[in-house]
Length: 52
Image 1: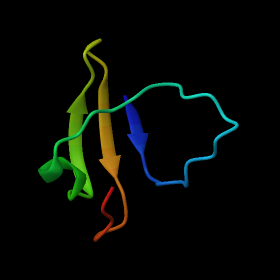
Image 2: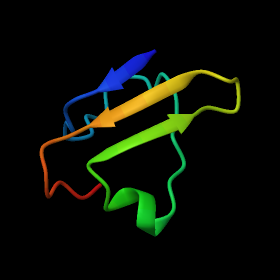
Image 3: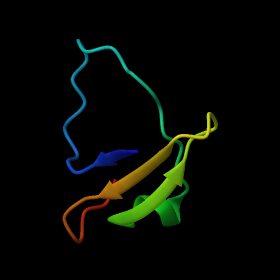
Image 4: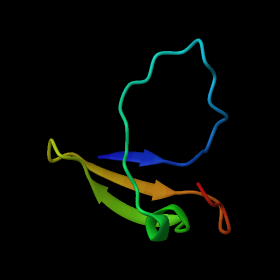
């Protein structure tokens, strides 16, 4: 299980490992549980009030 705890600025020189598609409602949540299309569980644990 992967836990995301930081939102970093997007550098252009680092390759993207994966993409997480979120709807508008999901981008406003700072605590959320996602499941990737491959079946991997990911937890979003950002500071409260963080909007992606």
